[in-house]
Structures are given as structure tokens and as C-alpha cells.
Image (spheres, rainbow, N blue to C red):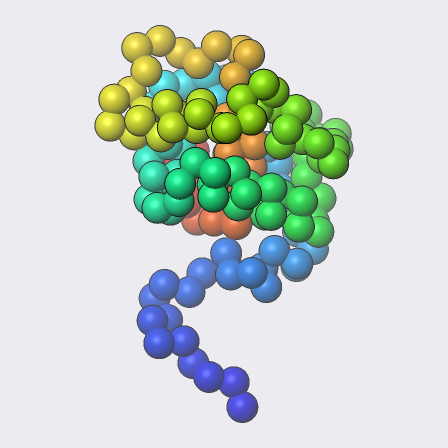
Length: 142
């Protein structure tokens, strides 16, 4: 006999079991990721997780590498998840200090659109939400 959740209103399709269900996720477009309003909502959702920058980076890796569904580029081609994706997109920022600056965007939006060089970082963060928190991802995209 399975137990009912104590807080059923908090249970969503983003439970760990949902990560193993075969489904398809499409990554955000460059146009979306270059919108200030989009990245501010993305930062707000990231802050709401309540994780430190290092824990957040670990969570990104855990969810993205653990996803068993298909990940597509906006054009419909397969989006490649390499074994070093997280390390590649954060490059020389091994302490993930950039994540701290990103999280600040939730309260202090950037003054200009994100530069192309950080789009891969934003895409990975956005992909995390599309996989683990699809309802939040829909709100980010509005």
C-alpha cells in the first residue's frame, strides 16, 4: 500500500520518478535566453530553490546527466549532453562564482541583454528547470 503525500499540492511531475520517464525536452532558443525578462525569471526560480552556488551546480549535473529522455535543440536536432557539459559551460569558473552573480539578477536585473558567451550557462540552467521543474519552466517562458 502506497502512502499519500502529506502535502499533495506540492507534488508535481518534477518528482525524481518523473526524471526517468521517457519524454522529450527542447532547450531554450538564443532569443529567449537573451531577453532580460526571461533571465530574471530564470534567476528568481533558481533563488527559490534555496541552494548554495556549489549545491546548485551539483544539482544541475545530477538532473541533466540523470535525465533519460530526449533533449532537442530548438531546430529539432539532438542536443548533445557530453560528460563534461557542466565543466565546459562554466569554463574557468570552477568555484561557480558566476552563479552568485546570476542569482542576484532576481533582485537586480542586468542592465543589458546577456552576452552570447554566457548563453550556454543560461541554457544549462534553463534545461535543468525544463527537466526537473517543467511547470516553473513554463512560467519562466511566459
